[in-house]
Length: 208
Image (cartoon, rainbow, N blue to C red; front, side, top):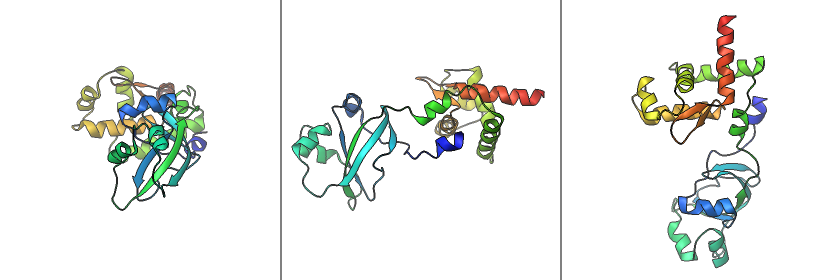
């Protein structure tokens, strides 16, 4: 059920600069260091990253000097180079995070592949979209525009749908993606199987 999937705890993003992403993907990078006022990840949970889902195996406060081995495991040639790159609040704590690429799929991806909607699913999804439409009705028009013009640049879709600011439009489309309705392409978007199923259900309800 949708509710069960969305109760699964994970953060939206753990960011890694581009030069570290291949090492994270192939497993040669297995540590990250972050300076935070409070921990932003939890041991044992799954998080999104630029290379897909990752599993955080443990997180601890750094209370001793970082070893050269740990610096290398984080993708740096030296401790000094690692410390130069660490950003964050001056009053924050330094955290050591053990991680690895996850064998599991992004829950959004699993949700997006669902090509059938039960009546309960449709009602629940419609209620979620109605809440998104509370200040402005945009969700259905956006889904239909993406259906009609898959792979179209967001910069071309946005003005046609009445969004003067591209960033605002992209932020809203990400809300549809979070519900498993759309998939981001290298250029533009397309409907996910779940999005196609939702539009079929909408049209069927109109005809009934």
